Image 1 (cartoon, one colour):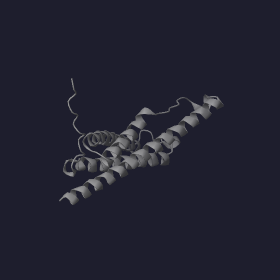
Image 2 (tube, rainbow, N blue to C red):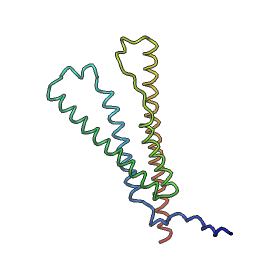
Image 3 (cartoon, rainbow, N blue to C red):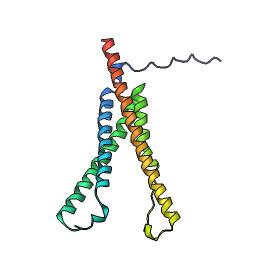
Image 4 (cartoon, rainbow, N blue to C red):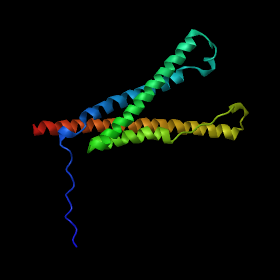
Length: 173
C-alpha cells in the first residue's frame, strides 16, 4: 500500500490577501498602548504619594481618581485590542507581519506572566526583607522595560512587513 503524494506547502499569501489593514491597526493600537503606559509611569512618578491624602475628599482628588480610572480603562481596552489584532495578524499574515505580531503577543503576555509584589509595612520588616522587596521592585521595573522594548521591536517589524507587502503589491501591479 503506497501513501498518496504529499501536496507541496502552500505559498505565502499574495500581497492582496495579507492583513495589511489589521497590521496597520495593530501598529497604531500598540503605539498608543506603549505611549499610554509611559505617560502613566511618568504621571505616577510625578505625583508624591505622601501628599496624595492631604486633599482627601476634595473635588480635585475625586477628579484625579476618575481620570486615572478612565485612563486605566482606556489602556485595558487598548491592550485587549492589541492582543486580538496581533493574534489576527499572526494567523492570517506571513513573514515579517507574523514575526512582529508574535513579538507583540510575547510582550503583552510578558506583563501578565511575570509580576513581583511585596506588601506590608516596610518600616516593620527586617533589613533583609526590605532589601528583597527592593530587589523585587527593581526586577519588576526591568521586566516592564523589557516588555515595552519587545513590543516596540514588534511594532517596528510589523511596519517593515507592511512596507514589504505594499512593495510586492506595487511590483505585481
